[in-house]
Image (tube, rainbow, N blue to C red; front, side, top):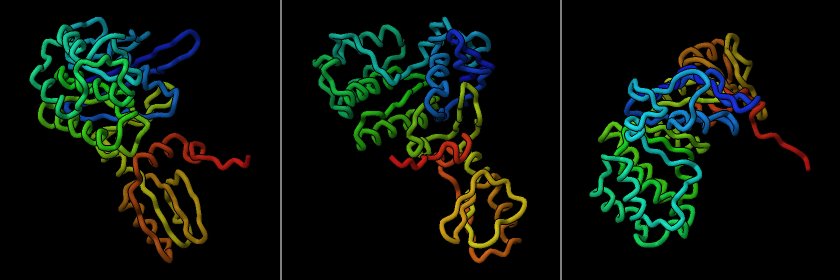
Length: 293
């Protein structure tokens, strides 16, 4: 389990993290989401032991991460901006990674050449952005990490390779109980693979729970008729006679209250992760605004 507990981090007068607490259960895929500037990358750098918090603690399986090489050797990451040595080939980076990760799997590394089909002797700096991202997955998965931390992991990959990468990650989770922390703006993809989700804003954790619980706690009510009483409405819109309400609560409770209003028509629908993200961050204030230019 990865735990960030009461983390505060300031850079000059700017508070990047404000008493942040985050728990990533073992063997799960955890999606960390939030608007730009929410503090996601800063939280990830704390999880990797790159930053030392001003206060609070960061532990993996109960042991501190910062300045702890033994713990860091069990953690691998793929940052948004990937760095390779200027003249390094993929084989050169294999040797480098083997010096850091004692559990590096050479047999798997050779096997993944058939998956990614990357040239062995070409310098990585000559690879396209998508090829460099594939190389990062090729290397990171072979470290056999207990915790894999990914920042915008599939940015730059084509649709086929995106599916291949997700398949490899989910296989690692299923077979080896690898814990995966993913920060991404692609909420549609996260919804397909994540077990748990944390929503950050302004350096704080707004909401953290399993995806199933999160989707079961907020619903969309569409109806024709009067707005039912007793609902906790987060947002309301209308198209002609059809009203759409975003309502906090269980589906059966919302349905019972809707029936009491005797609408001409109603239906209770689940929200997507993207819709939950929008309305948990303030509803209409985070929607796309129509601007006349």
